[in-house]
Length: 105
Image 1 (spheres, one colour):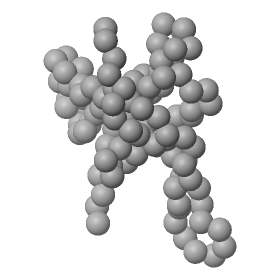
Image 2 (cartoon, helix red, strand yellow):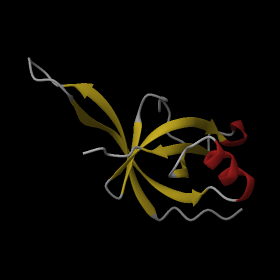
Image 3 (cartoon, helix red, strand yellow):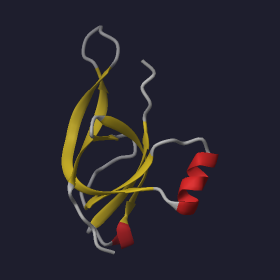
Image 4 (cartoon, helix red, strand yellow):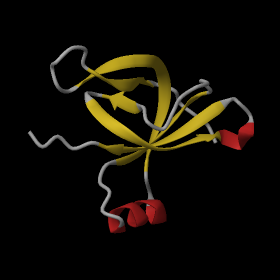
């Protein structure tokens, strides 16, 4: 499979705001170039059945210490990390499955 790392993404952590103000703020963990694949075929059908909308696969070069509680920011959209896989356990690429977070406001 040929990978085309042409899309810039940010991996961010949400941290509580300091002081008495409620809410969270984004702290950038790292930026990466990604090959982005949308879910197709049975993968897409399973995500629709499960009620998930906006599922994307982000393939990036290996970066250690990415955690499932982090988020992916791409083109102004924020994605929850559903899974992180070290492809072939080779420490070359990581596949992140992300679910778009819908803004209700």
